[in-house]
Length: 340
Image 1 (spheres, rainbow, N blue to C red):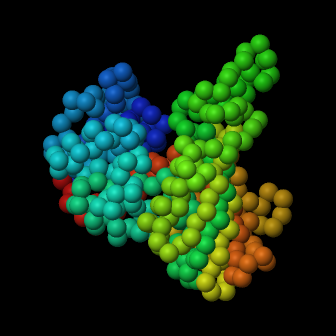
Image 2 (cartoon, rainbow, N blue to C red):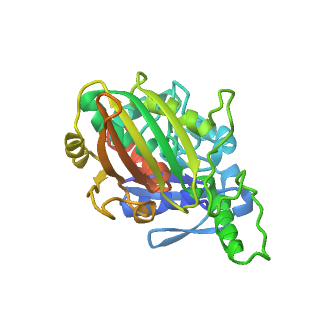
């Protein structure tokens, strides 16, 4: 006995990862439907040892389906999520559309699993921004111990966060560096991404921050604690998959780096790899395909009272998107839904 599951946006990077992770984690699926836009209709995708053909999202009837994992962007979600919800299907949405709606739970299962119980407000649960998801997994166990006052974070975000177009642009520009005849101008990004870093993700806001930076502030407050002060600088880097973050944390109470290590070593969803020697830390290349949020470089910050610095790395297509959505589905099933 299991659930009838829909994956919308099944041909994209995140949709394909959702299917991989549903199979890897042996999520109890009785029946599965894979949906895509009309232009991708009939495209084949893999689910475990099965090959599935996509159906038309526009004409699909969600009646009788239990859970829909959405990876179709905000514009399409605005149209199809209410249709699915009205049919009695719970939507787990990877877009930013519902994240800041007070009636919609924004969930990272290791941090605030109980928030899933509020899904009935709109029959929708929001998946957080990729950069926020891995950060709050690291912050939660430390916050429980010593209460966080302020977080300063600088992100190093891979191009897969911008979708297939971002990955293609990095690949093509990198090749063109070695073959100057092939000039590949910036299109997806505002400047050349190959062999460069770009301190600009999403649109600029009136205060000079970008929307990606604003998202990290707003989502951390909603998921973890509204009293935490957060400031972020979000940077796109020439890495295909895997987001990294340099995080500075200021606590209300004293905590030394050894205790922080001990807490993180036992924390759900965290893998502590922290040896004070060359190579004794995790980089994005090493985290690809893994479920964990990796923590390294834990050390005291001597410039503030009760300060800790750490390095946080995670596969953004997994924990930052697809994995978190599947984990939400698992929590929803165990807490709220009946199988079959």
